[in-house]
Amino acid sequence: MRQRGSTRRNEEVPSPAELPGPICPCRGSRVSPGGTGRLPLPRPGAEGRSPSRRVCRRWQQLAQDRAVWTHVDLSPHRITRRTLWHLVRHRLPDSLCTLRLRGVPRSGGRQRLLSPALLAALRKRCPQLHRLCLTETDLRRVPYESMPASITTLELSLCDIPDAWFCVSPSVPPPQVRHLAIHSVPTFSDHHLLDVSSQNHLKTLSLCGTYRITDKGIQAAAPHLEELERLVLRHCIIGDAAMVFIGRHMKQLRHLEISNAYFLTNRGLVAIVTLEHLETLCLDLYDLVSLGTVIALLQVLPRLSHLKLGGTCFEDELLDKIQENFPHCTISHTL
Image (tube, rainbow, N blue to C red; front, side):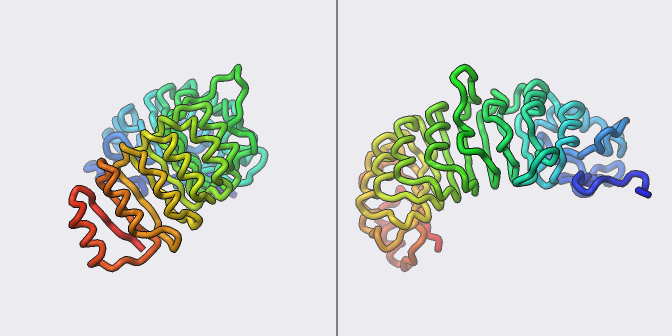
C-alpha cells in the first residue's frame, strides 16, 4: 500500500531544502531570491496550499508574489503532462516571462510533455511569456504554430522535431521569434534553417551540434538574416562558401563564433572583412587557416575588441607580441 504523501516515480517533488536561495528565518527553509527560482511541484489533484505556502507566513507571501515567479525553471525535474497541466491551471502566474521544461525524448502517447491544447492553455494563462526553453522534449506531434505567439526567444536542446516543423500555413501567424538556439538537435537541417529564418527577423542564432547544417543551408538562409547581430556555429559542416555569404549578407553582426569548422581556409576567413560592426570574434584555427590572416582581420575591423582563438597551440610570446600591436583588442587563447 502506498504511504500517505508519497509521489509517483515520474513526478518528483523537490523538498524546500532543494530550492535555491537564502534561509528563511522562521523555519530554516530556503526561499527563492527576487524574480527567479524553481517552482515547487504540486501533486496532481492535491488540494489546499502548496508545500512552500505551508512552511510559514513569509513563504505564503512569496508564493503569492507575482514578481518571484516571473522566471520558472522546471528543467531539473522530469515532470509529466498531467503535472504540467496542473501547474498551468493553478500555479503559473500571468506575469510569467521565462519557462524551462524537460520532457522525455522519443516519447509517445501520454508520455509526451506538450500538446497543442496545453500550449493553448499556457498562451491564455501567461500572455507575457517570451522565453521558452525545452530540453529532451518530443515535438513531433506539436505543430510549430501552436507555440505561444508571445515567444520571442526559443531554445531547443536534445529535442525531437519533424522534418517540416518550422513550415507553417500562410493563414496561421507563427511565433515572432527573435532569438533562436538549437543545441544537439540532429534532425535540424538546412530546410529547417531556411523556414525559420524566412518567417522571422532573427537577432541571434546559435546552432550547436547541428551536423545537417551545410554551406548550402547558410547560402539559402543568409539573405533572410540581414538583421542578425549574433551568430554561433559549432559542429556544423561549413566551409569557405558559408563564410562568403555571412560576409555578404550579415553585415550587422556584432558577435561571431565559428568552431569545429575543419574545412575553413584563409579564403573563407577573408570574406568577413565586410563585417564593420563586428566586436567579438571566436574562431578555431586549424591547418588550413594561418595566423597571418587573423592579423589581417585585426587591421581592417575597427570595432573588433575581443578575439578568442582556439584549435591550435600558440606560443605565449607570439600572442603577447600581437597584443602589443593591437592594444584596442583583447586577445585570448584556449586549447
